[in-house]
Amino acid sequence: MFRLKFALGFVLLIAAQALVAYILLHSSILPAVLEDSDVALQRSAALIEKSHRIDDFALLEKARYVANRPATRRAISQDYTGDWQRERQSEVFKALDTERIRFEEFMAPRNEGVRNLDLDLMNRRPASHEIFMVLDESGHGVASLNWSEWTGDNVANDFPIVLDAMESNQARLDLWNWSWRGEDRDLYAVAIAPIRHTDREEAAGVVVLGTLINDGLAERSKALISDGLGADGSEALSSRAQILSPEIAFFRGDRIYASTLRSRDQAELTQKLFEEGMLSRDSEELETILDIGLDDREYRAMVRFFTGQFQSDSPAGVILLTNRTDAVAPVARVQNFVLVLAALIGILGLILLGFFFYLFLRPFEKLEDGLQEILSGDKDYVFEPPSKNNELANGLAHQLNMVCAYLQGKPLPDEDAPAGGWDDLGGGGDEDASAPPAKKPAVAGVPMNLGAPAAEPEDNSDGDDDDSIESTEEDDEEEGIF
Image (cartoon, rainbow, N blue to C red):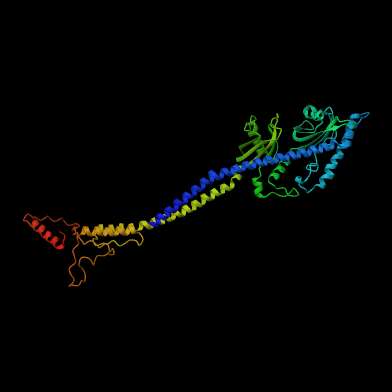
């Protein structure tokens, strides 16, 4: 019985512990992991924005450098004769090409192998620029390194910030949707620096430098977050860093221009955020955390607007997405381990419980067999102790022996005597003749006639009852009862 109770308690204890562990993991640890994931997204977004701002300042520094070069100032402000537009374009183009050579062929090789974080603004990568042009004081194009034949377009008509930079004589940063031939416009980060006349401080034009915001920038930003860039900028990311590093997407207005996502996921993200209205434009928060599903995968997403862009008509910013399943994978593994371990221990406990239950019931089956023997006519059957450890069954066997003796008119067995034989009870066997006769049991047996008709009761009307009563009183007095 003890082993049965122990096995049952063991199973219940393991089940309770597994349930408590699962509840703690699901209600306490899992929310904490998700909260840590949100904090990591906030820090990553802040890091990306800071890196973006440093790149902008580096671009601005280079634009100022080119605008203040004597060759650039002389080429834009001197007087030309004849075909002055063509001559001015040629001279400005030469001045810009000289600076391009300086950036790409002198500074870039010298800084190879050095991290961007260790470089000053002028030497910071990228060394090449997708927009490298000069505009005159009216905002029309003069020359561009990106398209040698380009000239005359009124850039200020689409980007009034050009005129603002010349009027204030201060450099400006901006985001442009630009295309050289009027095709689908890409997103550029641009720096606008005024070019002063050689003989006065008024602006004679501006230098515009711009870098394309593309998938390469998104990949570099992802590597920066996971700290996967080594000293040479090509060190591979660890497997865990690749899992935990969020996906990056740069957007402006209702369009995503660069990301580390697959094209299908990028299109689905654009649809859910902007077309289906998951991202509210009425919110005054610079950061918004969303749960979004892409291609049957759950993501925890943070949308962060760049500084100075939130109130514009086409705000720009960055989107970071962490795979929710990967983020909570350690907790999920522990939960699964707890459930599997509890199931295995529970199965083992049930097996032990069934085995002990079988051992517990087996003695009672022997008692049942004994009852069948008695019912079959074996009046002398004696119930032996059916088990060494089952006290309940042994006690029941002893009680059954007493019941059988009582019903058959036999003397009751002594409780202290070993169950199973009464040959030494009631005067039978080889006894000493000189020994006093055994005392009769206090309870007389009742004859049990198995199959014989019951005897008719004798008529005691002649007064035998009175004699019997008197004889009993005399015996009791001798025994000292009265």
